[in-house]
Length: 606
Image (tube, rainbow, N blue to C red; front, side, top):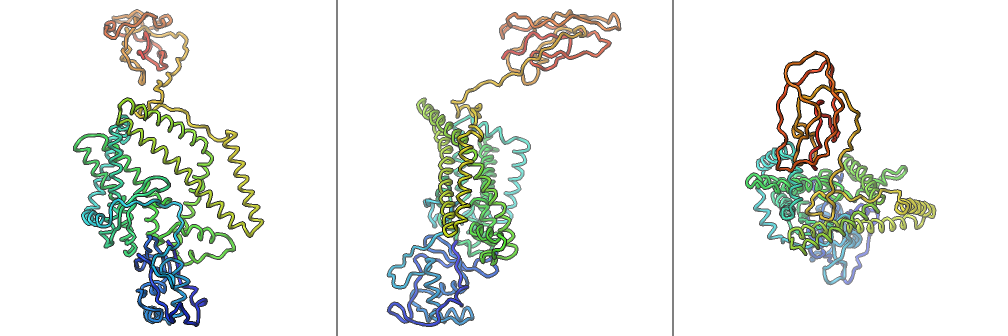
């Protein structure tokens, strides 16, 4: 958002001279497509601010004096008439020369008015060069279509409906995460490519429905939503809704519009739960899990997503990123507080300062972590991409259309972070170089300091990347979804090593015990059997109260196990002979103790 005011008017404005291009009093004109939005209610500034929107979509913030001049320009009134109107509205004397000065020096550079002497009304005004902003806009639904959709869905913002939806969503989440379990449906979806396509389609539908929430929230508050389209956000495909008209509303209306997208995600979650209850298909729950991740991502105030605009409307500052530099400069000892910060109210200034102090270190740490791990991330991602491309081609060659389509989606998801990282690195690097060059151009000492820091960073990163100081690339792991990752080996986990034990003195056995009843948890599955034991079974009453000893336990026989169809040896129940001393468990071949007096033939077949 571009900001302009007229605080320099009184000391810099011209005091005389009515000479103009062929007219004593020139007639100013507004640029094509300019819309007057009105006062920015709930502003965090001490002085009221007013907003206008240019034809290219750029919103410009004006002082009251400039806003009154814009409101008086209609293409027919000349500067003298405009001066009389503005003087009456602002209760201060404004001369025609003052009006012309403000039009030429303040409004024309912002692209709000057309330069004097220009025939057409097309003006290319300055735009805020934002790094984290949507690029390449493409309209999907036009304003009339969006208006009909928003009008039909506005009833979902009624307070009783909102309360009911939130109550159902909370109860459903408690059941999913606390009782049923959320990961089992996700794993089940990952194992079936056809279900992956269904969940992907549901996720795209959730994104579209999210934008309907913004449009209907704007409509419910009295605004007029614009078109819905898509673009690229750091090379990621994203959607947007034009709700610029929401600036005419109060803070409550703006917050309703900001939260409308996340709220409609919750409505979509409730619908997904309903689909699961009606059909019993687990892929609905997998889509619910992914929708939760989408909601958390939208609420992060670091990027220009819903959380960023929610925080900005709470503080009354429409452009938080525009306050980063003034806030940081105001913290430097000995420097005056910039006007952009001094104009904020105490509450708004506190919110913005806390956000800057939390956001800037987070971004710096994330960039440093990315640079430190860049070789590892690049090598792992490129290796995964090569395997994914090969598997996708194999799937199509084998006629597995669903698996091939899922593979294409996987390739796209791998390419986007790589391309986004390269794009962000180039943009950030070029900005840092330009800023350092501008700052050090007239300061030789600062140039030496900047060069030293840049050289030190280059040496450290070169040592990390070339000298293998940083972490290695991630090793190949077992697949989470074998159907989608056939290039990964399905190797069994290594069994625990068998401990070596010495023969022990034990009580006489109560009889052979089937391995199936004593096999430890986690043992390999397979047909279980029992080999004959070497300790004779005893029955009847005990002959003495003293301890009874047996020889060392005989190791398992080497005889081949019977086929799975054969029955294990019969077991005759016997009465155990008690001992006078406690017995010591004897470890089996799997390392898990079993009761004494029993020698197992072998572990379960693997």
